[in-house]
Amino acid sequence: MLRTRLLFGSPRRPTVVGTYAPAGAGCSLHTHACARGDHAETKSRSSLEPAGPVRVRFAPSPTGMLHLGGLRTALFNYLLSRRYGGAFILRIEDTDRKRLVAGAVDNIVRTLEWAGLAFDEGPGKPGDGGSYFQSQRGDLYRKHAYQLLDKGAAYRCFCDSHRLESLRAEAAAQGRPPMYDRRCLRLSQRQIDENLRAGMPYTIRFIAPNPADPASSDVAQFYDIVHENMRFRGPAGFDDAVLLKSDGLPTYHLANVVDDHFMRITHVLRGEEWLISTPKHRALFKAFGWPAPQYAHLPLLMNADGSKLSKRNEDGPIQGYIDSGYLPSALVNYTALLGWHPGSGEKELYSLSELEKAFSLGGLSRSKSVVSRDRLDWLNRQHLQKEISCGSAEAQSLAGRAALEIDEHVPGFAQRSDAGDTAMRALKICSDRLTFTRDLFGSAPYLFVDPDLDTEEATKAIAK
Image (tube, rainbow, N blue to C red; front, side):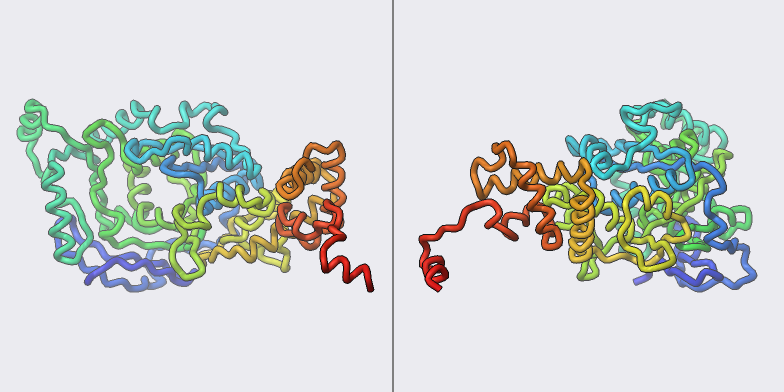
């Protein structure tokens, strides 16, 4: 079966994704490396460090609670904005109304606050870009979809769902990627007018460029900060994407590009799964006459068995880590090391403020990261000891939490006037034995309850 392969090549050679075939034609997907004489741009990753302030965004879709991959994307964007100055923007991409999950937006905002990742613009923190919910920006998207239609860069598609499904089934049977055959692009103006008068529903499709055309080389070839020189030869990433659905709502591709432009985004750090969409987005920027941001596509997070980590995995949702008692400083430290390395030394323990000073684009890795609870547990122990030893306000909060946890074993303990002080002293005594504050009672129960001297074991010990 023919398939598109994504190969990560050496820094000196552009990575090639597929080969181009016109829409509706048979596809040859042999992948090969480009010669050094090709026009792909070669850069030093260190030269891409921003020279001035940046504007970055974390743009989750509220179709579930924030997961570890989302937190990493948010963290890297946040760190870039703090390292070089600028703005970290939270944008809610909620145009897929059928998949919205109640409470997901509140969960995203609360989790970012818990982790200490304060956004500068977003829900409740207005800037000059209008609403930060895509569902409230529909007029802007429709205006720009019709702009492309008027300038001949897009067209109306009247094909119904049955015909589109038939095209997909035919492509699957032939072992090629599903692509629209441009039937509606070939309609005459008379046919279009008749369809409109008849009230036929339509979508607006973008006319994708031919990556084999030298005029489209700046779309098909680009530099990704993580994967370096990329070349797409199609058909992947070059189908005629729907921009505006028949109900007037935008697709991800249109809304993403329009928002990145009007919010003046300079750098897009996002998951590797969006790499295949980048030529499409770059083509849209070009069609509008707008400069494209710089892109960095972060590798996938993996389970220990090699499968992709998802929000449905046990190690996915952030709320699970919070409920388990992990400290925000430990989880942030751990998340930063999933795909980033400072480049020198063996330092692993970082506070958020230290990460803000150390983070760099050159430290991003193209290797996939395996999620390990063992490493996270070790980091949580280190951060717990550090907080306890410094006696900060956070340490007092930890003592209060420990007192409530001890109360589960010693009813009434949390109501004692000295509960907080007693728990704090116990934490200092046992800190090198604890992964979580809930481990305190099991580590040293004798600090909280008097021994039972009537047991057989106690009687024998006393007799000796």
